[in-house]
Each structure stands twice: as C-alpha cells, then as structure tokens.
Length: 405
Image 1: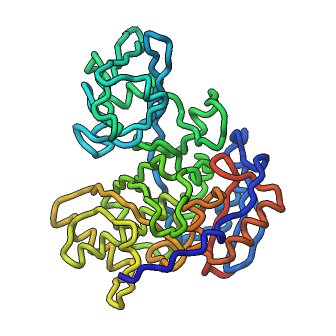
Image 2: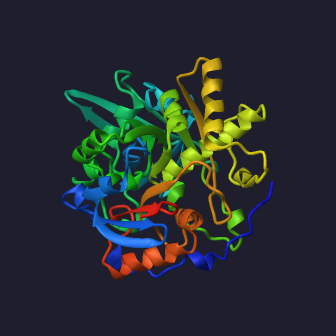
Image 3: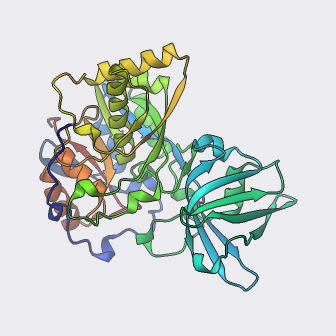
C-alpha cells in the first residue's frame, strides 16, 4: 500500500464568520443558491436550475438514510437531566435496519451528558404516549467506559424506531448552537429519506424537492439510491498534525443489486453529497476485495491508497459485486466503511459531486480538496464573496472537475 503524504492541514483552513453559517433553513428548499464549478470555471445559479447541469447520460446517486431523533432526555428523581445521544447499535445486532425494528430491548453505544450523575445500576425511565397508549422507556448503563446503554420498553407493539420517534429530539449539528424548532423535524430530512438510522442528515440532498426530482426523471436522468447511515463522527474536526492518524468514524452502508447494476450501466456518475461519494468509492474497493478473493465488506480508512497497475475500472469492480450477489442470491448487501479521502486519492467511481460548503479543518473539506485540488480555495472564496450560506442548512454547489462547459 502506498500511503499518501499527510497534507499540510493549513490547506483546509479558512475564515468562516459566524454570520455566514445558515442557522435556519430557507422557506423553500429549492431557493438555495447553486455554485457551479466546471473544469476550473465558476458561475452562480439557483438550485432549482440543477437540471441544466445534468444530462441524459448522468446517473445521480442519492443517500436515502433517514435521520432519527437521536437525542434522548431522562430526568432523575433529583431533577438532574441526563442527555443520551445514540451513536451506533451494538445488540441484538449491529445492523441498523434490524435494530430499529426491535420490539423489546436494544443496546447502543452513546454519548451521555451529565454522565457522572448517573450511577451504575440506576435505571432511568420516562413515560411516553402513543395515541391512547402509555408506555415506559427505561435506560441502564451496561458499560460506563465503553458508553454502552441498554434501552427497554414495556410494549412490544412498538419498534425502537417508533420509540425514538416519540421520545427523541432532532439531532441538529452542534455548530447551529440552538435548540430544535418545529420546522427542523421535516426540514432536517431529505424528501426521499427512507432507511432509518442516521444521526446527521446527508445535507446535500436537503435542496431537492419532489418537483425537482420529477423534472430530472422526465429529462431521463437515472436516479440510484444507497444508504449510508451518517454518524456523529462527521462533525469531528481533525485535531492531529498528521491527518493519516485522524480516527475516522465507521459508518454502515446498505446497497441493493439494482443500484449496483445502475452504476455498471452509467456513463457518468454524480454523487449527491459526500456520504454518497464515500459510499460509492467504498463499494469500488469492496469490488477490488472480491476480485482478490476477500468477501469482507469492511473498508479500512487507508486501504484505498493501493496504486497497483492491476486495479480494475469502475464497471469491472461493480460487475464483480453484482456477480457475487447473484452467486449468493442477495438482493442487497450491508457493510461498513472508514474510508478517508484526502489529497493523493484517485477517484474510481465519481465524476461529479453535489455538496454543501463544509467546516474549516474537517475531513469533508479534505475530500473536496482531493476531488478538485487547490481550486477548492477559489470555490470557497467565491462563495464567501458572494453571500453564500454555509454548512448544513446552507447553499449548494455542483463540482464537475473534468467536464467542459
């Protein structure tokens, strides 16, 4: 494996004034601005015109994960409030879709606020109301060091997905620095969200409306969907001097055979969001693994810097996945990825990217720098100079580094 040199992290730092962070969504999703970058040329548009930059040979890949109300609150008898933030499921399965359908008890790794005031063995509980039914949700510390919490409830008519919908709060990004409001519940969710399990939204998709999606379909653009359950690690800044030592978070991917076949047939693949891009590039490396006789779909963060001359192209790698799924009679597959894309990575699948504007010093900005090179500075400075709104509820961009105008 040929590891990349650690980039100078100063290359992903820029000054982001607090007033440029979009603290609330626009009234209409499609009213956001759209910065277009095509082979070095930048122009300004509105997101509702996204179809002008896509053609019939384009396959758009969306992440259809659904944000769950992952922030739960329990109050002790003393009045002390304990905040529990769901991170990832541990039992009875680590597969998100399985755990969300559980109807008795689950175990999660969590972040816990005010943890010192929650004693081992102490059961916290809260009463919930579902239609005309009342039930009790209980939480117990199983492992303090590993932050493992067991949740159980007394009515098996309700799945854990339904429980958190009743008990939880929208997990807004920390940089918004405000409490959730009623508008956040529908707006911090894409209109095509389907698979419950994310604790942060795939925000590039927040700009799409049903009308825009219908218009793209009528133009003949192919829509493909995969699932990457976005974790809280997406907000973790790089705090080390050597970027390669940054502890990348692991996230779950689920993809159908139909999507794999769509990528095989695609002439041009544009990822909607960094989560879709990370998923697609991870799938390529799963195809490489299969080609080498390794069926383990757990992509490690730096294995992607294998620069062997024998690496397959996109179609070959995805064809290998499709053949393996056929052989094993699988309609969908689940895996995990810690993929860490930074300058030095050679993209294998994605020709373009639709994305928002990211935090300084973040892994997502490293990904942008890897995709369009040093031009990312020009793109971000243009956005700052032209009153673009930044971060999750901010404006959008479409990056097409190799496509000519």
